[in-house]
Length: 270
Image 1: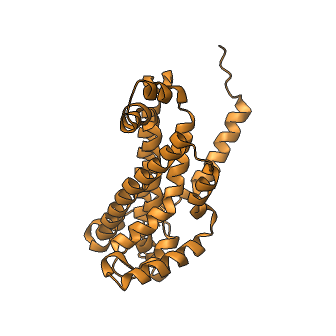
Image 2: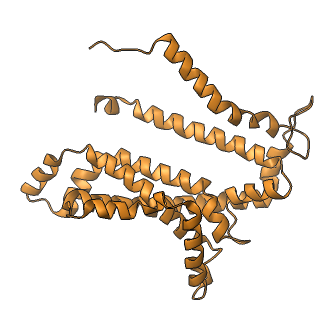
Image 3: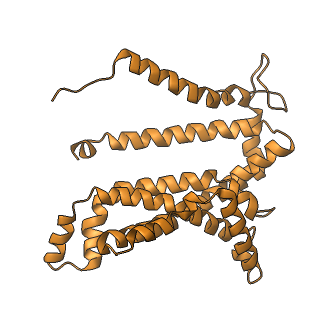
């Protein structure tokens, strides 16, 4: 079969759009090497002072560890909940499945400010019973992030399930497989990459979440995005540019690894 490749004009337009989107991100790279105490382009000399500050300042390390912890917990729980829900919809096909899916996707539709206020009142109410699960707590932040990210995971898993042939599930059921055997030995192996992609997406969304986090945290649960926001709001700390470059590099590496896995022969055969 003849493969159609994009022409020179299409390639040029794609490169122009990519440059337009990436240049604002790349502008932060030279700023991160400035020796100045304010956000500015370096004048003549370069310095790693602000990168060193990320290591020496315990606030940055604490925020990174907290964001990682919350992100991992959110990713695991949200992906498990979303996969369970999507499997139930796909296997049982209830009469009101569209209504159920729409209800789960509500946090994607409701404005973030409304969700943030709702979660704020919920967590402050829980704080009356236990500070460990309420406002400005790790568990509270994790609960809020789960609410906000489950819809995205549900969409990813449903898309993966839509590509699975139902006949393999019917064949397994006809051969006497239990529900657990059908799920863990037939369905999940066929949507494993989709579930992994959903987990990665949820982790990224939790890692960068700032709108809701500003409403439900104060001084104890300071995530990395909140610390960056505080730095921009209070003193425009150039260390924010340094951590931004680190995050850009990490994100690029993750995307390259994901692309490498997608280009493996087993994925190309599918």
